[in-house]
Image (tube, rainbow, N blue to C red; front, side):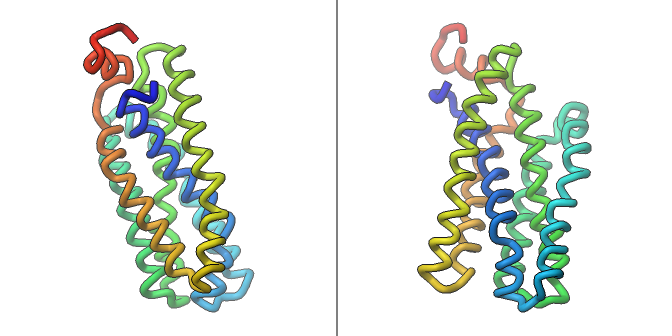
Length: 200
């Protein structure tokens, strides 16, 4: 399965979503307190706002993907909004703008339901979907388990949140070509057959 680029594209898409969520829930309030000087209550509210943004996404994304084939637009909206939100936090971490950066960054939550829907529609059979889901989630959650610790180590080494935020920006940029590949209207079985000339 790992020999099909589409599989890795789905894994990176899912992994990017997981990394952003795990890192955010681990460090976001601390980042807000340190770089913007807000109190703990405000930092907690901003984290709740980030989480809330993902709720309507989980309802709308499956409909938009299945009915309108809006995979790539949704992916790009999530990634670009996340990039703008993180860049805003990095360059303009003023209290009056934190809600805006949080909402924009929160749109990266589009990637999670998007990846889950793609696992099903990029497979021909339930058996393939199970195998694909196992691979994608194993890769994705491995990255999600490592990155919160990595972000903490980078912060300790640099005594700043600038480098950790730049790393998250780098993760989103890295994911862009994979998201484009994941948006192709094909299946993992078709990709395997095209490349290897044999039935999946």
